[in-house]
Every structure is written in structure tokens, then in C-alpha cells.
Image (cartoon, rainbow, N blue to C red):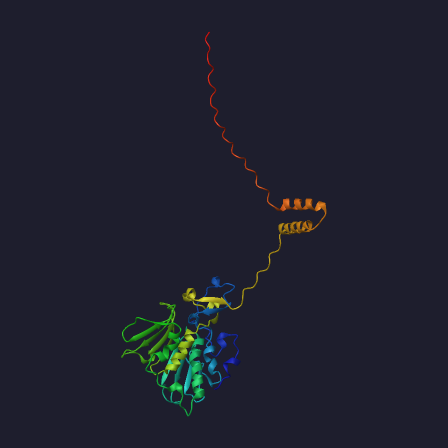
Length: 339
């Protein structure tokens, strides 16, 4: 069954979208008690950094680059939608009620086991998933005689996978033996490379975002994933461009780590109605100005009278302190005369 491209589907109800979460799905969406909902809770805001924006209401952005590929709706199973390349070698599954909402793989042909696969945690923004699906759509369109870059073996050089991160200023930090980790300048995102012999090949490279103790957004890549596909996802992760969300979608655990900019400027506040005192002052000022330009001798009297009413009274003169009188030497005592 092939559904219409997602762009033509209604988007008023997130639960009705083919890539939307079900009505009971609340993974990654902070619950807001009724008494905490404010008038701006549903305001559209730009979120920076983008990797902390959360998964939003639907996975539409992740499917946008492959909207022209065949769609197979499987609403009865855990995979609610499967989008495949026309030859079915690339498969993109949407698991809206799972912790890993996107599962992507590629194989030599439609019936062969996957050569590699990737999965995305429900907190990972679908706009970042679009970095991978865009690269897959381009690789498939450029494939010749069945040979596509999406099946190439990964490079032996790690730089080919994480170059966009180091270009964005991510730096390496200390990690356990046989592992490599780079982190973003703010410390809230990173990439983990597992080179251990007993590693889980399904999680050879992990992109993550979020503070410790938080239900981090993660993208897992198996050991056989082509390096340029990991790099395409890493570029979308480190892109400085903000993402659009409604204010209430931001998880409270990361509210203090993101910058929210209203998508529309705030409405101008209505001007305050003038008070009777404002009206009186305006009339007095206008009278003063008119009087100053009137050459009639009586104008000076009106100007002085108006100014006396609008200006503060002059300060009271301070009485000078009494000057201490100079001391007068006592009069000499009269000379007593003796007869």
C-alpha cells in the first residue's frame, strides 16, 4: 500500500499524522499541570542549541527528504509506517510509540539482511534525523547499476565520520580505554566511539545530547555504517541554526540550558489613557509656548504666571549663621582718687 506524500496529509491533529505520536504517547513530552499552563505556553519559539529541542509532536521533518518514496502503513504493529526506496534497499521505519522512534537500514537487495542500521531515540529532533535521510535520498538518486554510496564500507579514519563536529569546535575529552569521546563547547552534546573488542556492534558510534541524569537524545550507528552518513547526521546535530517548537514542548530538565526566542515579536502594549493631570499639564505647556511667541506686553505676565504654576517653587533662602562678634576687651577699671 502506498500512501500520499506526507506534505499532502492533514497536520491539524498530531495523533492523526502518519508520523505523529499516538494519543497515549508521552515520551519526551513534559507534562504540564493545569495550573502551570500560561498564556504563552503554546507560543512558537526558536530553540538554541537545536539538539536540546526535543522530538516535537511528529517525525515529519525526518521523512521530508524521502516524501516521494513509497509509503507502507503498518498501523497494527510496533512499526507504524515504513518508507522504502523504490528498490526497497533502504528502509526507514517509524515507531511512534517506542523509545527509538526512527530505525533506518540499508541492504544489498530487498531480501538481504541489513548491511548497517541506525536508530534514533525519541528525544532526538527529527530535523537531525533529516540529515541522514537527506544523504540517503541523494545517494540512492546517484547510484549507478545498483552500486550506491549508502552501501560503502566505513572509512578506517574516524575523522571522516566526525569532521563536522571538530569543525564546529567540539573537543576530545578523557574517556575509558579503547573509547573516544568528543563533546560540544557547552558540554551538552557529544559523540562516543566504542573500539572495544567486546563491543556491541549495534552501538559502535553514538551521538548524544542532554545533561547527565536526563533522558538523553541519542543516535546509534552500527559498525558497518558508511562514514559519510554518520558525518551527515553529525552536521545536522552541530548546525547552529535554531529549531522551532512550542514553548511547552521544552523539557523542564533542559529549560535552563536553552535559549528561547519568540518566533513573532511581542505585541505592542496599548498606550495609557491620559489622566486629568496629564491633560492639565499639556494645556499649561501649550499656553506657555503660545505666550512666548505673542509680542503683546501682557504676554510676559501670562508667561510668568504659567511658569509659576508649572515650575517648582524656589528654594527657601537659608538664613546665614550668626557671625560671632569679636570679643571686646573689658574696660579698664576706674582709677580711684584719694583726697
